[in-house]
Image (cartoon, one colour):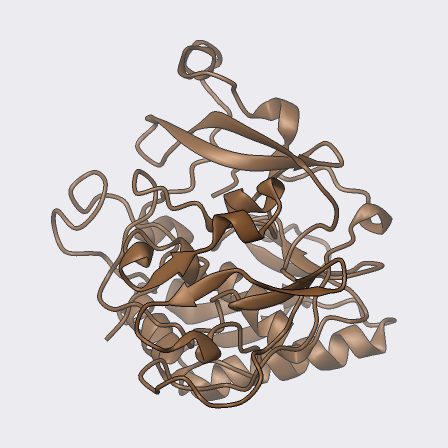
Length: 326
């Protein structure tokens, strides 16, 4: 998770999204018909692929792969870690400088919104952004049976400890942090659908991209040669910082699509190994297992889900923003 605020110029953000296929349960078989087409979440254009080191929640160096675009370190396409120069190039540099703490793996209690209550702020002059974000929040609240609730900010004289700040941008969607972590910025462009916003709020709640689970290769074959190399970090599995809990869900709203377009051509990015490729990439709403994920994460009164001992890095001490499946 990013522990620093990205220094962003809002007009410079250009994250591309298009509506994807319909919402389905992860247990259904692949439907017949043409494959869903969509642009990938994230910053458009080619970026320089780098590897670097960040500190995880235990203060230990962790190797990550990211892209550099507009001077920012972009992890998994639509997550801004911070200025690229802040990411150490080597373990030795990170240890020597004692930072930055951009740890992706975090303690559960540190990144879950207490009692599932998310304090938010909307840009009211931008009516379309307000309406779509409100619809996304209502969807999550309804699907989770009220376990996740959203409360508008009313005190503007005091800076809150944690806030979901919705910011209008010229194009696309994205977030600068995962989970509860100070001021979390959610970037919403005019083409960003309600489903896209649900996806981004999923990050705010602590959910990771489904195709980056450590067990991904058991269920999905990534077709690396079909995509530009600068897209590879969006599909990189790093078991040092990711932890899987229970089952994989191709129908998750956090999963990328199996097909997209590159230079006007239809390209297959992933192949389902159990015939569920048509479920990938839906942005209609939370799947049944997405709902179970959130309920697992926020099942205790403190608003945190602690994995069983030995189920991840640090013997259960760390909880990454991963999917929890029934």
